[in-house]
Length: 186
Image (cartoon, rainbow, N blue to C red; front, side, top):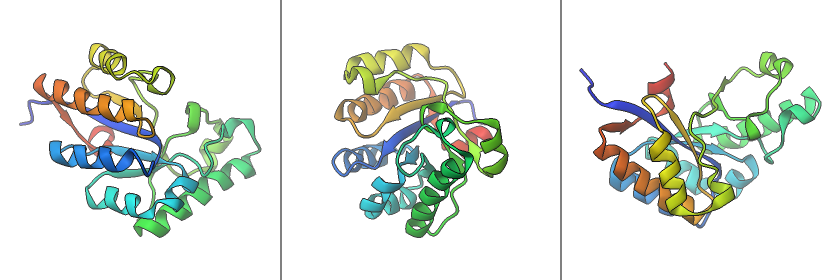
């Protein structure tokens, strides 16, 4: 019987050739699995990092090809952004991409019907991209997180990667277990 409280860590907008390797190393050291919602064109430039994520047991998800607001364009163009990203990720990982996180959480109904993927939003958003302050990000997450929450961070800022490590260390001490999306959503 699992007495731990589950929580999922997710990272958007990567991979970053500078910060993602540091993050992957720190996650491995802490025995934590996360989900990475990758931008297709960044993944294409950093295939080794994407392969490392899969090898380390992380979930790789779709965050569109160029980070666009999907509901601000035609369904055809939006679908192209999604399928182009899937193609890149599937070519690199050899696996089907199941999860999508639309940039800005923006998706419309018509797209939802066309797109046969599981949409993943978030529960805790510390606005790390905006403040880029490690302590603030840690405080916002730790004070607001609850059991079964999905935490949103971005692995393209050093402050967010550093914050992620503090968040993990604090929450693990509080009895939280970091799980992948499939464990949380299924």
